[in-house]
Image 1 (tube, protein in one colour):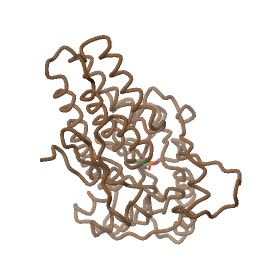
Image 2 (cartoon, rainbow, N blue to C red):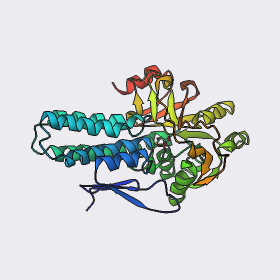
Image 3 (cartoon, helix red, strand yellow):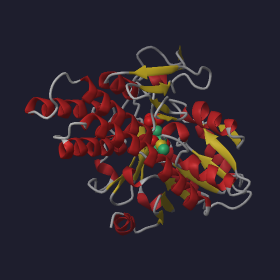
Length: 347
Ligand code: MRU
């Protein structure tokens, strides 16, 4: 009997199983990780992706690491070993702060309860709590965000901030789901999200599965679609929100925000408090992951660019706070000045 099972992941007690998001929507293949190293690889290789999803996954990876240890965890050696598990998992991806947030929470629990006989059970419980909380938090984000959408609205979204990017329900797609559940008719335009195609492969698939009206466009169409008056609001997720309200999210988000401002369309970011990083003052300090050039030169394995062409492949960009109409969190919607309103959320 799994202890937790969603579209994104399953925790069985001695393994974490992921739907391989690299293969969706054409194939539904599952990958089982029984060690923290396998979990590290699943995050790094984007079998599982999306900020809250990788946070929860790393928490389960941490539990697997503890189970792997052949000795007394309540010893200098045990503590050093768990530090190395934490560091290994933290090195899988650099931008989404939820990864570090979840690992810090797990490690704190470990250090606080070190002397407990059932430390492994305590850690498993903590990872399950992180995962269950994520679902509840997304539902709360959805509830607050749904109030911003009117019956009949069409929403543009970028990347995948859906059930697959979280433990379940989603942040940006959670807002859309909640509005639909509240009886509103909502249509969605999904950017395909080059180069990794999370919009085409995952967002379109998720929304169609739920029977929510979705139209797929390539990224370069967003401006034209907005100019035609087809979009009432933009809702995206986030990988890290700096203390001043600058938002790192999937590459292309910044362009969408600029276009939204040009067309007078509200631009909302939906994210949990675990994505807000008050220790990072502005977007300039957010580390931006750069990924393989092959993601640009090849489309689904087929080469589309000349051999040895020079490439630049940042996986995220930063949208400055002044392009963001509101940030939808589980504690409500905050608006500028974000350096004040974000801090208040943690009071
Ligand atoms: O590289 P990815 O697919 O992990 O990037 C995901 C995104 O940028 C999402 O929009 C973000 O994590 C928000 S998920 C609720």
